[in-house]
Length: 378
Image (cartoon, rainbow, N blue to C red; front, top):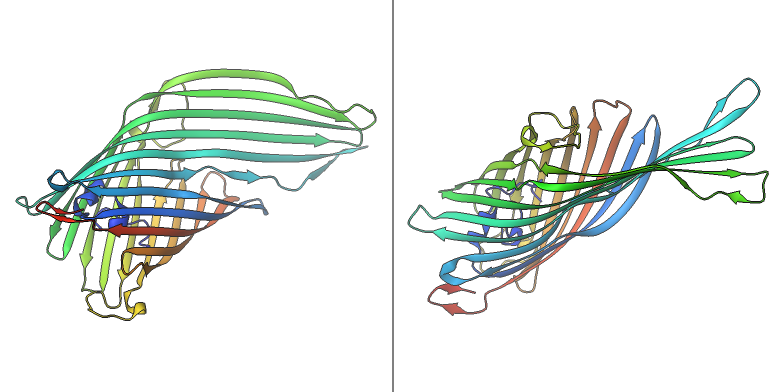
């Protein structure tokens, strides 16, 4: 609800998704889940394609363990590479005949991760919270480029397919420090180099409308496989939040992805040889957070935010605005969150290309203190 801002925002239901030090603030068992509904329009040269997809964004749980701290587990779909684009057929005329041409693009895959983390408060160090975690990341990209050319008697179609897969192990760390109404947060993420596999295949098929045989079987023209030691770029982020009063909270984050530290022995990258920057800011409001017997609408959470990100491809950007609300459920033991984000991606190398997107998110979150002991609540 804050445009993705979370480096220095204390939120039980965020668990360790942005900063693992957030686990150090959690003193009860919490469960968090988000389901995403995405609409994307890809436009190029005046033609456009729309597609819709739904998928679980994340599932996470935090479990206090007394003096040890809090343990967190999560499954997250960090990015989704689903995309389909196929414009209308174009007619190309010659002196005595004409042909039609139709390109197309289909992509699947994305980035998913499993994480386990730990966070703890250190009261003697200004109530500093420290967190650490292990991450297992799966990166997959399956891309097919289709080109179809047809005349009055024959259709020829070529398919150029590329599949890239990488499994990587990562380490995460973070801290949060309360400073009166301010909180500051820092986090970092580093991945151990691993081998990525790549497979590329080109196929061709044709059909003859004058023959009863119809469509011919696709014939492989070329196929290659390779692997390469690859390092995912590390990430560092910092943020601050300010409690304006009991009702209002404002926060901002800035992070850097160090693409200058990315390398691969054989896979080329269009990423710039410099860090790319992301920025987000947002505000959160609850009408009556401290009232003993508030009306229901006075306990509803409201949030809004903005974010901007440089994308890995040079001269590419993404920006979006978001709005959301959290509806208390289960006598204050849970929160049903509803939010949407609308934004745009552009690429300076292709002035006629753009992506407009709308993300709608539904989150179901719950928490409970199970018992009281000398070490705290569970």
